[in-house]
Image (spheres, rainbow, N blue to C red):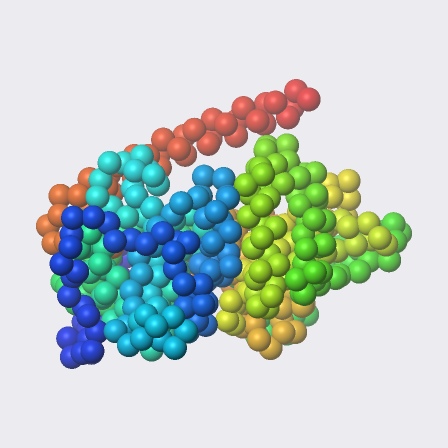
Length: 408
């Protein structure tokens, strides 16, 4: 994939009616605290967003920002129209990007804003679909006016409408985005027939083996797939998920949500709040009364997001995570409101990649805000070096863990 995304230039006449000039006061950062944003306006913007991203919904971000481990106290670049809205009296919110400093994101002391970590691996911003490019222009001008030289979006959808709008906005100022790293991850085309999709993805032989495993699992009790949608049902199902996640390898590594009070508080607040608006489901696979796998699935507009999966590893020989994902695939394909499901998984994920054969291009994108800025090459070099060091550390840790596993 090319390092630079190119789009046709934006006509200045299309900016008419919008305050695209930079704010006068550049002596302080005008990025707002997330908690200060009107939640009704935020929700309205999400309904109008040019591209869905459940991880930037108000009912996800606000609980996250309040208590989640290492993710609290983010700020947000926002922009509004000049026309007062009926709900707040202020101009309607038309753009929002949660951000932190480059120092906080990378420990790099440069005037660069970085998309805040939303826990899920997607930072696509919310831009009003009717004025997406104009909104992008205003957001970038605001970042520039508060002294920033670049904005970095981590794990952004490269081919989506939001990135196209941001690219067009940069082109308006004679600038171009730089892709710092890119990968593809699994997604599901939920407009297809589920049985046809699974047969094409896995083949007849693999499906037969999975049916055999499911029949063996049924010897433990009737296998059922349950979907919790209402806030009360989600609250109950969430506890099942949290216990399953903490019982497995994530619990052993200390990364399960239940193992940190702030993370647990965040997900316990976010899930029912999203369910209240039809934006969260928790799916559970049971053998009799025993839960063997559960997952949190977020929804925004016509897209689903497969957030996290927890399994009871005592049932590992029956592939409970795969069995749940097969049922989830059928569930999503049968839902006319969903056209695509984003796995939000790491590239090459051994469980989801063979089942969901669609691919989404995801990457870290640097949006320069000034021409001939000395900061941009410095930021790119420093982040690349940091990435190499972290990769080396992860490889070493992986080797250590494998040796430990062999010795236990």
